[in-house]
Length: 431
Image (tube, rainbow, N blue to C red):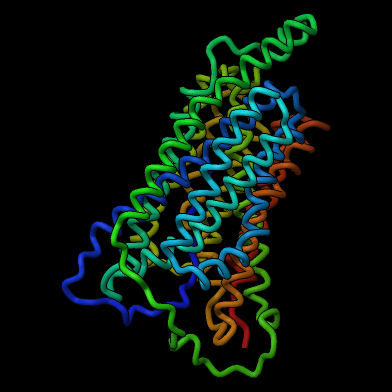
């Protein structure tokens, strides 16, 4: 999932002959890195569940604290950028991320789940600042007419990072010797603590490595001669639309769109969070965690493939119908996962990733259509709706605890059912 934000800056600062290629490459590295960190959470959830002896509901707080940062930090991030500019804002975001990565060391050594959650909040806060800064900055690094091409290319690398993160972090964190719940419960108290400490310690070196990479990337950006983009008020046809409405909430398609973004991000994150657990169920595939790590990667790889295919198809297909079609197929796939067994159910859940691909950007653009002077405010509310990634996974975890993980896929299924409504009805612009 890549964040799309409308820039308040204009492209009038573009200068012929300026080298924008090197800054673009440097900033695109940020897209890849924050995708790696975000999607590493899908590995952390089952791992910390075992290491900290958590329920499914408790383990889902990994996503609650990480994505909760989007809700709490998006407005402060905008103010930081207004005051300090893009370059300093990006460096501040990287500093927060490095602090979060380092916090994993004492968290693992003490087995304090609360410390893990604080570390994840720091990581999420840093990534929020990067997202708010990097997306508009990329669009300004070159000619105005190629802005969308640059942003799509950068987001392509974001999808690449999302696809490889579960496999990479799964290889570094998950163990071949992981015990089943029954085997763990059979150990005495001292052996259980030794095992939990051993499991928790496997996150230390990967996150130390992340901290080093973040530091080096921050140093590269600090010493790079990135173009200074002056903030100017953007005057567009959209901003000049005359309207008699006095509040952004008088646009029903924006209101429905905010809920749709909340539902989409929540569903996407929830599925990825519990995919490894689902693959480990005896009636599904009975896979060990280290083997099941392939499926979150395939889930995100499907999103990457769908994004490139969708960018071409959306030039010929009505975007609202594309939303309805994608959400409808995702709903049917999750219904299949709930009522079938074996690899049929597992493949159905994994295939949802392919139909996730176009949903976020297409919901976003249809929701801000014809908002006129309220476009920027509407965009801010849509960005804050990413907090769905913090709310829906715990809800799915709660349903899993009281019922089972297979039935819990009802939660994201209902999210896609709402998005289906949005595509057909809720996204229509009313006068």
